Image (cartoon, rainbow, N blue to C red; front, side, top):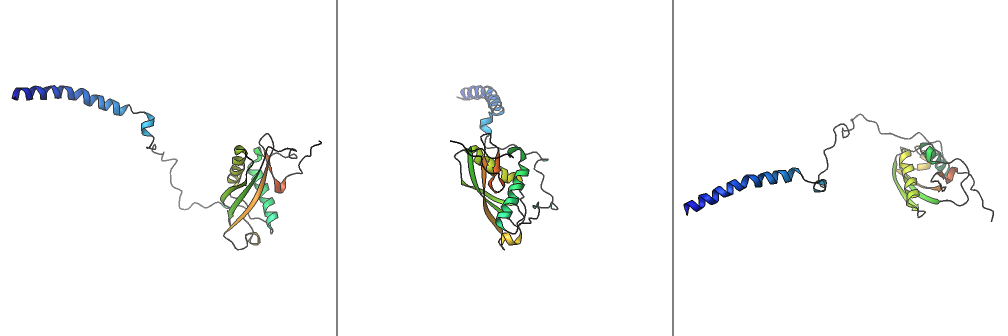
Length: 181
């Protein structure tokens, strides 16, 4: 029986090296799908913390004393910050989409939230409208008379989209073209 054990032990040790080698090779050859749960280590240059001395960006001071005047200032500000996506002529008679957004800003003009109040059924233009607000943040800082002692100001604005995907904001838009039926 002792001979049998040593033979068994010898055959296992000669079998162990190829098995361990195979396991090491398989571990090294894992597919990207096997590593989905592990996020790659971020680059130190990208994830460096913001210095404690960094200043929070705030919007320019608004001169508007009424909400409608403030909405016109914001519409102009959003248009300037999205100038490639804005058209300057009259909106076409039949628009591609009309999107109404609810915009919430704090007293510094920093956008706190954007929500679609009325969509057009065209997801692309809805997303473009929302993105245009975030791109323009911070917005003009609402005057004390407009914000009325509140921490934030919530207002709505309407985006008018032509077929080419460019827009105007209703508060400053030209009169829409008419159709002759």
